[in-house]
Image (cartoon, rainbow, N blue to C red; front, top):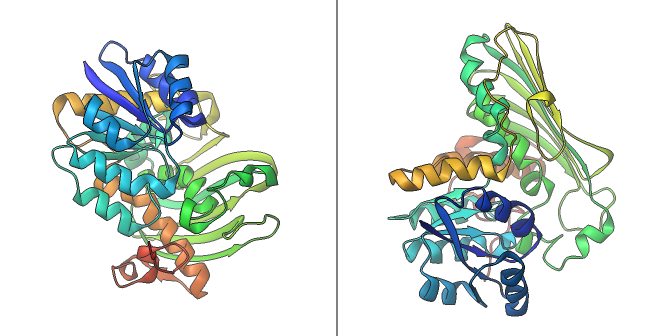
Length: 344
């Protein structure tokens, strides 16, 4: 049995991670939970039948000695906690956004061995996205993509103490919400070369954007528009891929099944109907653990969407196009998405 621990006893852990783990009960056992609020960890453990609870990651790693840690804490804590898990020898699966900057992601990756770090990117693992990636080479040259995350978050959403600030959340909806749609787009259209973007804070009392728009040029020459909003009363997640010989579209909100996809080609015949979910990705992650192989959404794959988000922030701030080659360790946006520098 793979010994699994959950760090962070908030909503995402109970709503998404525990159901995924229950579906893997034949090979994964949840042995512990930790939260900075020890009382909340105790309640979570009791509700979900978890035998041990702790008030810190350090205590959990030393006493429970898990093989795999599900990191469900606020983004500002991810890098430090992920590195601590990796140094203990555990694998770590990190909720999105994986961290606050490319610098932090590279530090996480550098701490790997023997364990690996992977980021939650569940929309890559539904049957629709998997099928599109498989047949994409047969659909002709990629030409145009549309990537829309039109969601709604009211003022109360940002009253959670760690939300609304670069230091604690890393960034706004570009990195915290749209990153899922962008990740699927990148999995199909590949690497990008240049980004031109604008961001605005139109209606929420936050440090970062509540709206962003970007144009992306890919290495292939294909172009994409990326629209992100937390002000859209009619919520929708939308992806459109125009190839030379076909158009494929996906309309959903927080998760999809095959019925949410449409295509203009007879090649569109997904062999199964696996919904996009934490469970779909966890299944693949545990397969990699059992084979002791690098899992999907680690290293370069795990960096892709964060890299594009970084370019969007940098372009909007500089009011000019940004190329991937610019995002080096010498660029302030490599270290922090508002272009500053962490002081602690």
